[in-house]
Amino acid sequence: MPTSGQARTQTNIAGVQLSRMISTSDKRVGGTGIFTCLLLTTLAVSSCGGADENKGRGVSAAQVCDSTLDSSAQSALRKITRREKFEEPHRFNVSRAVESLRKSKRTDDCTIFPTEDGDTPDIQVNFDVRDEVPDWEKEGARNGETFYDAGALTRATKNGVDIFFTCHTADQKGGSGVVKGDLWSPAATTKEDHYRLVTILNSISRSLAGELGCGSETRLHKRVPQQAHG
Image 1 (tube, one colour):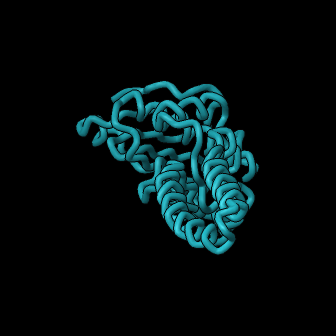
Image 2: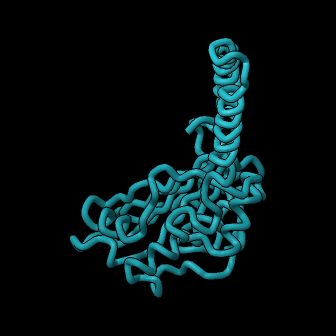
Protein backbone atom coordinates (compact mmCIF):
# COMPACT_ATOMS: atom_id res chain seq x y z
CA MET A 1 0.00 0.00 0.00
CA PRO A 2 1.59 3.36 -0.97
CA THR A 3 2.23 6.00 1.64
CA SER A 4 0.50 9.37 1.42
CA GLY A 5 3.72 10.86 0.01
CA GLN A 6 3.96 8.14 -2.63
CA ALA A 7 0.28 8.66 -3.47
CA ARG A 8 0.85 12.38 -3.99
CA THR A 9 3.87 11.67 -6.20
CA GLN A 10 1.90 9.19 -8.29
CA THR A 11 -0.91 11.72 -8.63
CA ASN A 12 1.48 14.43 -9.77
CA ILE A 13 3.01 12.13 -12.38
CA ALA A 14 -0.46 11.18 -13.57
CA GLY A 15 -1.32 14.87 -13.78
CA VAL A 16 1.62 15.61 -16.08
CA GLN A 17 0.75 12.66 -18.32
CA LEU A 18 -2.90 13.73 -18.49
CA SER A 19 -1.96 17.31 -19.32
CA ARG A 20 -0.07 16.07 -22.34
CA MET A 21 -2.99 13.87 -23.37
CA ILE A 22 -5.39 16.80 -22.91
CA SER A 23 -3.33 19.08 -25.13
CA THR A 24 -3.19 16.49 -27.90
CA SER A 25 -6.86 15.51 -27.58
CA ASP A 26 -8.12 19.12 -27.63
CA LYS A 27 -6.36 19.67 -30.92
CA ARG A 28 -7.91 16.53 -32.36
CA VAL A 29 -11.46 17.41 -31.33
CA GLY A 30 -11.20 21.05 -32.33
CA GLY A 31 -10.72 22.43 -28.83
CA THR A 32 -14.21 21.47 -27.62
CA GLY A 33 -12.82 20.65 -24.17
CA ILE A 34 -15.09 17.62 -23.68
CA PHE A 35 -12.20 15.21 -23.40
CA THR A 36 -10.47 17.64 -21.07
CA CYS A 37 -13.41 17.65 -18.65
CA LEU A 38 -13.62 13.88 -18.62
CA LEU A 39 -9.94 13.46 -17.90
CA LEU A 40 -9.89 16.10 -15.18
CA THR A 41 -12.86 14.41 -13.52
CA THR A 42 -11.02 11.08 -13.64
CA LEU A 43 -7.94 12.65 -12.11
CA ALA A 44 -9.96 14.23 -9.29
CA VAL A 45 -11.68 10.95 -8.42
CA SER A 46 -8.36 9.09 -8.50
CA SER A 47 -6.74 11.67 -6.24
CA CYS A 48 -9.56 11.51 -3.70
CA GLY A 49 -9.47 7.74 -3.77
CA GLY A 50 -5.78 7.78 -2.83
CA ALA A 51 -6.48 9.98 0.17
CA ASP A 52 -9.35 7.77 1.35
CA GLU A 53 -7.14 4.71 0.97
CA ASN A 54 -4.63 6.06 3.49
CA LYS A 55 -7.23 7.41 5.89
CA GLY A 56 -8.11 5.10 8.80
CA ARG A 57 -5.31 2.60 8.23
CA GLY A 58 -4.39 0.16 11.00
CA VAL A 59 -6.18 -1.26 14.03
CA SER A 60 -6.80 0.13 17.50
CA ALA A 61 -5.02 -0.87 20.71
CA ALA A 62 -8.16 -2.84 21.64
CA GLN A 63 -7.74 -5.05 18.55
CA VAL A 64 -4.03 -5.91 18.56
CA CYS A 65 -2.74 -9.31 19.71
CA ASP A 66 -6.17 -10.91 19.30
CA SER A 67 -7.82 -8.31 21.56
CA THR A 68 -5.87 -9.50 24.63
CA LEU A 69 -5.11 -6.02 25.99
CA ASP A 70 -7.41 -4.87 28.78
CA SER A 71 -8.22 -1.18 29.19
CA SER A 72 -5.10 -0.46 31.29
CA ALA A 73 -2.85 -2.23 28.78
CA GLN A 74 -4.47 -0.40 25.86
CA SER A 75 -3.81 2.93 27.55
CA ALA A 76 -0.22 1.87 28.27
CA LEU A 77 0.39 0.97 24.60
CA ARG A 78 -0.97 4.29 23.38
CA LYS A 79 1.16 6.24 25.87
CA ILE A 80 4.39 4.39 25.01
CA THR A 81 3.99 4.71 21.25
CA ARG A 82 2.03 7.99 21.16
CA ARG A 83 -0.22 6.38 18.55
CA GLU A 84 -3.88 5.47 18.21
CA LYS A 85 -3.55 3.04 15.29
CA PHE A 86 -1.19 0.12 14.64
CA GLU A 87 -0.31 -2.39 11.95
CA GLU A 88 -0.23 -6.12 12.77
CA PRO A 89 0.73 -7.84 9.47
CA HIS A 90 0.59 -11.38 10.89
CA ARG A 91 -2.37 -11.47 13.21
CA PHE A 92 -1.72 -13.19 16.53
CA ASN A 93 -4.34 -15.72 17.61
CA VAL A 94 -4.63 -16.98 21.21
CA SER A 95 -6.10 -20.40 20.31
CA ARG A 96 -3.37 -20.97 17.75
CA ALA A 97 -0.77 -19.82 20.31
CA VAL A 98 -1.98 -22.44 22.80
CA GLU A 99 -1.77 -25.18 20.17
CA SER A 100 1.72 -24.08 19.18
CA LEU A 101 2.88 -23.86 22.80
CA ARG A 102 1.77 -27.42 23.47
CA LYS A 103 3.21 -28.82 20.24
CA SER A 104 6.50 -26.97 19.85
CA LYS A 105 6.84 -25.21 23.23
CA ARG A 106 6.79 -21.79 21.57
CA THR A 107 4.16 -19.41 20.22
CA ASP A 108 4.17 -17.21 17.17
CA ASP A 109 5.05 -13.59 17.80
CA CYS A 110 2.55 -10.80 18.24
CA THR A 111 4.38 -8.01 16.44
CA ILE A 112 2.92 -4.51 16.13
CA PHE A 113 4.28 -1.87 13.77
CA PRO A 114 3.57 1.84 13.27
CA THR A 115 1.02 2.55 10.56
CA GLU A 116 3.68 4.64 8.85
CA ASP A 117 6.19 2.72 6.74
CA GLY A 118 8.97 1.24 8.86
CA ASP A 119 10.77 -2.01 9.63
CA THR A 120 11.07 -1.53 13.40
CA PRO A 121 8.12 -2.79 15.47
CA ASP A 122 6.58 -0.89 18.37
CA ILE A 123 6.37 -4.09 20.41
CA GLN A 124 7.05 -7.79 19.90
CA VAL A 125 5.65 -10.48 22.21
CA ASN A 126 6.13 -14.26 22.35
CA PHE A 127 5.81 -17.11 24.83
CA ASP A 128 7.69 -20.37 25.34
CA VAL A 129 7.82 -23.26 27.81
CA ARG A 130 10.81 -23.26 30.19
CA ASP A 131 12.31 -25.86 32.51
CA GLU A 132 12.26 -23.63 35.58
CA VAL A 133 11.89 -20.13 36.94
CA PRO A 134 15.34 -18.51 36.97
CA ASP A 135 16.86 -16.94 40.08
CA TRP A 136 17.47 -13.51 38.60
CA GLU A 137 16.45 -11.27 41.45
CA LYS A 138 19.76 -11.16 43.35
CA GLU A 139 21.78 -10.54 40.19
CA GLY A 140 19.17 -8.22 38.71
CA ALA A 141 19.16 -5.93 41.72
CA ARG A 142 22.85 -5.23 41.08
CA ASN A 143 22.18 -4.49 37.42
CA GLY A 144 19.49 -1.92 38.09
CA GLU A 145 16.66 -4.15 36.87
CA THR A 146 13.18 -3.81 38.34
CA PHE A 147 10.93 -6.62 39.58
CA TYR A 148 7.14 -6.71 39.89
CA ASP A 149 4.60 -8.82 41.79
CA ALA A 150 3.13 -10.68 38.81
CA GLY A 151 3.41 -14.41 38.17
CA ALA A 152 6.34 -16.38 39.55
CA LEU A 153 8.82 -13.73 38.35
CA THR A 154 8.44 -10.47 36.43
CA ARG A 155 11.47 -8.45 35.43
CA ALA A 156 11.78 -5.16 33.55
CA THR A 157 15.08 -4.30 31.86
CA LYS A 158 16.19 -1.63 29.43
CA ASN A 159 15.39 -4.09 26.61
CA GLY A 160 11.87 -5.06 27.64
CA VAL A 161 9.96 -7.27 30.09
CA ASP A 162 9.93 -10.98 31.05
CA ILE A 163 7.11 -12.73 32.89
CA PHE A 164 7.36 -16.30 34.18
CA PHE A 165 4.22 -18.04 35.39
CA THR A 166 3.20 -21.56 36.37
CA CYS A 167 0.87 -23.37 33.99
CA HIS A 168 0.90 -27.16 34.12
CA THR A 169 -1.53 -27.49 31.22
CA ALA A 170 0.97 -25.76 28.89
CA ASP A 171 3.29 -28.76 28.67
CA GLN A 172 1.39 -31.94 27.82
CA LYS A 173 4.57 -34.01 28.09
CA GLY A 174 4.66 -33.66 31.86
CA GLY A 175 7.35 -31.00 32.03
CA SER A 176 7.85 -28.24 34.55
CA GLY A 177 4.79 -26.27 33.52
CA VAL A 178 6.62 -22.94 33.47
CA VAL A 179 5.77 -20.43 30.74
CA LYS A 180 7.87 -17.40 29.93
CA GLY A 181 6.40 -14.35 28.24
CA ASP A 182 8.82 -11.96 26.59
CA LEU A 183 8.05 -8.42 25.40
CA TRP A 184 10.61 -6.33 23.54
CA SER A 185 10.00 -2.71 22.62
CA PRO A 186 12.39 -0.09 21.23
CA ALA A 187 9.62 2.47 21.81
CA ALA A 188 10.04 2.22 25.60
CA THR A 189 12.76 4.61 26.72
CA THR A 190 11.93 5.49 30.34
CA LYS A 191 11.34 3.58 33.56
CA GLU A 192 7.69 4.61 33.38
CA ASP A 193 7.51 3.10 29.88
CA HIS A 194 8.92 -0.19 31.19
CA TYR A 195 6.22 -0.24 33.85
CA ARG A 196 3.69 0.19 31.05
CA LEU A 197 5.25 -2.76 29.22
CA VAL A 198 4.69 -4.87 32.36
CA THR A 199 1.02 -3.86 32.24
CA ILE A 200 0.78 -4.92 28.57
CA LEU A 201 2.54 -8.27 28.98
CA ASN A 202 0.60 -9.10 32.14
CA SER A 203 -2.67 -8.60 30.25
CA ILE A 204 -1.64 -10.75 27.27
CA SER A 205 -0.27 -13.44 29.63
CA ARG A 206 -3.56 -13.57 31.53
CA SER A 207 -5.48 -14.10 28.29
CA LEU A 208 -3.12 -16.89 27.21
CA ALA A 209 -3.33 -18.56 30.64
CA GLY A 210 -7.12 -18.36 30.49
CA GLU A 211 -7.11 -20.15 27.13
CA LEU A 212 -4.69 -22.75 28.53
CA GLY A 213 -7.04 -23.32 31.47
CA CYS A 214 -4.48 -22.52 34.16
CA GLY A 215 -5.48 -18.99 35.16
CA SER A 216 -5.96 -19.90 38.83
CA GLU A 217 -2.35 -21.05 39.34
CA THR A 218 -0.48 -18.29 37.51
CA ARG A 219 -0.57 -15.49 40.14
CA LEU A 220 -1.20 -13.08 37.27
CA HIS A 221 -3.51 -10.43 38.70
CA LYS A 222 -6.18 -8.47 36.92
CA ARG A 223 -4.97 -5.34 38.69
CA VAL A 224 -1.92 -3.52 37.36
CA PRO A 225 1.26 -5.18 38.77
CA GLN A 226 3.14 -3.27 41.46
CA GLN A 227 6.88 -2.86 41.80
CA ALA A 228 8.36 -5.41 44.20
CA HIS A 229 11.91 -4.05 44.36
CA GLY A 230 14.81 -2.95 42.19
